[in-house]
Length: 181
Image (cartoon, rainbow, N blue to C red):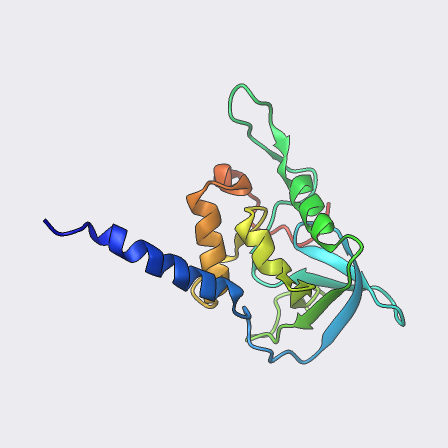
């Protein structure tokens, strides 16, 4: 009797996912790099204070998060919980006391809001913050980014499979949470 195909593919699938998640998420085509200490305003929006300049507001490219103060439903008997604040605190924990290095991601089309902060792919040491927020379930991938970045897709897939954090309450996430409340 032949072995089940899932058993054969599992080690290969894990190897492929490991390679995808360890690869740079977006090619370095950025026009600008911003470096400094970060302060989270939401789970995707933050300010970087560089040693020589004014704070710069950026948004982690491709991420959708609930704004701080958003309540997500708890699983009975647990009460509702502040998922927006949890997402913000998770990003802050990732940046805390570390130098954040962000590459501004060039837009493919003019922004709807010209005053919106630019999208960026950011790292703290070797950790990609965009991927970290997706794989821990504190952010989901914006629909416009799905299928454009294999590492982002893989990180979100793993979080969804394990029902990590926001994936347990996905139907309650606001549709456009770019601005802190």
